[in-house]
Length: 428
Ligand SMILES: *Cc1c(COP(=O)(O)O)cnc(C)c1O
Image (cartoon, rainbow, N blue to C red; front, side, top):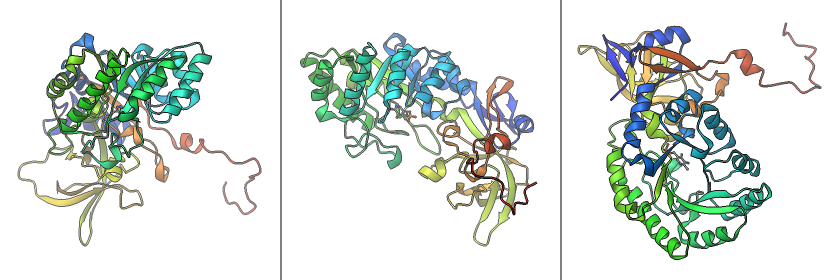
């Protein structure tokens, strides 16, 4: 089910016309669909027996409190990679005992915060981190339930910047070394090793690398059990891809079947950390056309959103569909165009060589599948304001993050106390 469809020639989010939101909040803005979130979450959750799986939504894909709460109300836990994300998850209503803390460089303060909140699991990614956690945990008189994140040295066959499971990537403990680290963990005070965790990358559109990785995990669990560890939980990470262009990502059912084949016999409680697949297709970025510029070699449709609002095209060469909010009629004349933002970098290009109808200034375009790694990666580069976020449910919409003001932006800076206004200043 796609929550973004044309009705009477106008793009809607559920039952709300996109131009109505634009009139209320201005452009650009992110728009998320509650039905889209619910549908993705339930499709994933229903692929597994509910009492045998915990779905910890990876907050880094979209950390808006209203998005997290929508998923938490369906039963989702949270996978977090910083104290800030942990605070977001807690503020959104995720119970601490459904929170997993991942990440290659958690600080001592962050580990202490996690322990005092009593979260479900901390995924340890290195031996020095294990030693540090043991010290902190023992000092606080706590016991940290840990997963050991292993690096299975498997190529996820995705963009190199979001591939995390090769031996040369910074993530996890080499799987060949995991038994030794488990043995060490068992001897350390304040540590209870309960789980093996693995996450090999993001936007994975073929089950094959995941199957290979999970096979290695199964072999490891056999060895760990033979060593006397009771491993009854597995954290299988996130990474399932979505459709941006013409990909055919695996269905949750196919994913579940593969997991049953590779890991089912171990009879473990499963934890998942899906991010992109929960939110990606449930969000769009709506932007206005500023100018339709006929260059010598190209047509450029210049819009009011830019790379600072949605970094994926410039950062990962990512493809996003672009749809006019006013439906293009069958007899419309289309011509090849690049859709670009106003930022002073050639990388500020959302799409190249798209067949676009004639557009006028003020026309709205929707950049599709922008719900994941969109707003969370935004910056104020070029002193542009962060864009607002809107959540739709049925025929209602709510601003779930307002557009800041220029005062908000400027007030983040301050002058050094020796900086008076200069003699020649003309500022009045
Ligand atoms: C990024 C990340 C995820 C989520 O990845 P998706 O591809 O968005 O599902 C899950 N677990 C860990 C450890 C991550 O770093």
